[in-house]
Length: 327
Image 1 (spheres, one colour):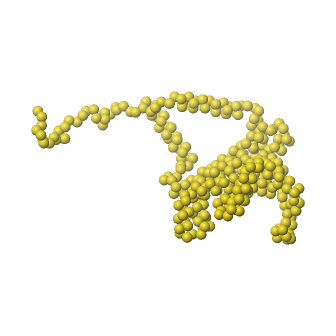
Image 2 (cartoon, one colour; image 1 turned 90 degrees about the vertical axis):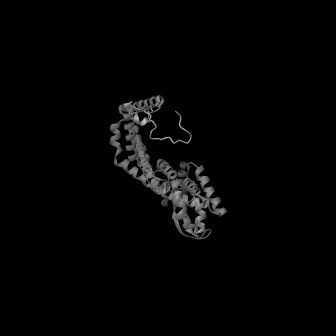
């Protein structure tokens, strides 16, 4: 019997469907997409890694007993300290020079722009080993260095051969080369800051130096930090070239020991390799926390630390394995 027009229908009297999802305790779950290719590639990679590790452990050619003998020898540690000293001084001086060159490139003065561009172009074009060898033989061009009036009398005179020690040549050469690359890193970071920040600072009447130090440069560091840390990693490895200017750094010490003990060349090279891995890994850890510090205010949540990433990954892996086991 049909309802008359305009009659209200009671929802309470409507029958409740028995096949509603809430009433089915054994509802079918959505199965994850199977990816057999991923598992095959993972298995192949694990096999290759296992073979490499097996070769490193079982191949007698590596002479791991001699590696343990040389790893903490005083001569090797002394070379490592020289490497750290050269890298630290060159990093500081190179960054300072790079900031000055970047400001010159961004200056309104055409002379400063031209000089900064020429310097960057020159030292990015010339190999570092050429710069070091040129500085090592610099005394052949100028036997004395002097301070005084330009094109006039000299007040103080230095003997170049006494001033330019092996450490000084290494630091100066690496700093000159590093400044050219740091200049482009800093300039790119400054240009990455939104133009509105410059305009807002100028509208407040702030001095240009204060604008750069307190507003522009702190924001530019978010872009400068990862790029310059890559430069630092390259700088640590580039210190191996100072061996050619008679400075016994880590690689120079290993090279000398290899000439004295030719049967230990491979374990000595492994010693240098492991120490360089430790140094570059330490720089990478510092990079992560510096980036995390300057990410405050730029992201909604700070990136998780490596330990937290590992815990999250293990938790997700366990949940995935349990889900697959339940299926």
